[in-house]
Image (cartoon, rainbow, N blue to C red; front, side, top):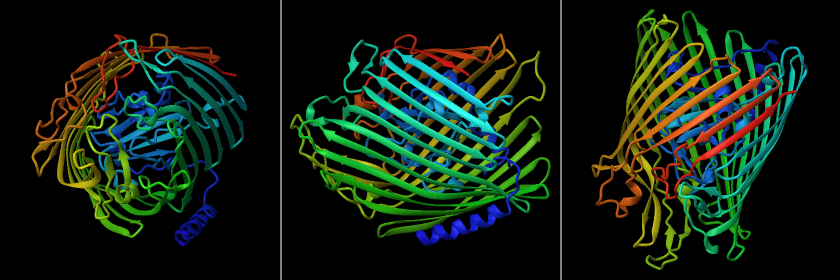
Length: 636
């Protein structure tokens, strides 16, 4: 590993000597046509949502869902029905690879996020772990905040959320001088137990967190560091409503995220190289006996993205290498349910964009991926092909084929020890069973895409329509098989599964309003048993209407999310039908943002306006009731 990294550092050093002195554009690895299908959430929308977590930021997008809540530490991000174990999450280019059986990698301060990009479907260019899609978070810089005529920026903020009586304070400061920019931010949040629609409080859902963030930018070099710490008394499985001492623990979740990137130009080649190190740790102390568990994932890696223009064509290529180091302990000894070990992954991709004519574009791609997990290793050449047809400037049609690979994790292969006990005594104690023969997931995705954007407005109103249908075939899908009667839990493979889905979004806007309607549905099948995959999300309609009659000074948004019932399960396979049968429901929300002379900004939001009593599909706990939030930010 050290020799490989040293070689890469040497190559980067050669690039840096030849780099230009001016700022370079961001390097993209998707074709310009594919960006029409990419979900991009801008900074203005992020601010308006007064977000508590990732769910608040992206849940209204087509094909995006969450399960396992409402405790944020237990929520799972889903893209097209695939959970976050198959989704690549990046923050400033650094992988967020921390996953346990019940906790996730969504540890960040939403106030720091400048933009979010979401790609759906296998992303071979982003290497292993992106078989379901990729989500990229970009943080703010001093150049985003300091106005041209000033050299400094200071902004304190206070916000309040009624659902959990959360008080949050933060302060962001920035300095800019010529090509140098430095930003520092500190924030803290203190939340009490979450109130549900029936008036009850969700026990052990309170938390307190602190965030330190530092970012520096100089010419084409940027470095960012974030320390995130959350402290909570919660169930050891935050996805369940358990409150007896044997099931509760004092928990600390802490993340250190360090990312360094450099943009360079060598001859006609424009590129960006990123180095990163992410260390995320979960520390638990069980209330009943003071038993101490520790789980830690340290991810160290390097990624390069390059683009070379050639006549009317473009050649994109790059590589990524990274290592995951897992460490688990219980009272100072090894933790069998979180085994120690390291895993090494590498990926190399080539994706030319070829203009055949003004109407036709093709984008073939190859990605070589390999991984080594203790004594288990494998490699595969992945292929992709995009064919784009543009009969009119306003109409774009595309056919896309892509392959993906998702390697098992150390915990999937070698996990052992006690999983859980049954406090009622109805079933025997349940133990993990290792499966060193577990195979990597292999994915083939077929997708038909359409984008239509009239070149002219109708009475000043513009429009845009995106629609796509897809079919995703899985070989050896990894899933957790629990046998309550036998008292065993093991990660194993489903030989053949298939997802079929559809997403559409239509948008109309002018200088005063913006409205968007979207729909998403996905179906999953176990092709071997011909049964439904019951964990597939609910069909969802989303409608947003934003009004800004006074330009950027006031923005008012109404949002409606309609979830259709999910009862697609097979009774012979699932005894507890009530958990998998979720009735439909609707949620209404209102957002208001007011700016005044660039000196202050006021945000107000009301979520679940009708105080709907519901539980999201795949979640064992009822969601929050009506939430009224207020935020005030000052600018100096």
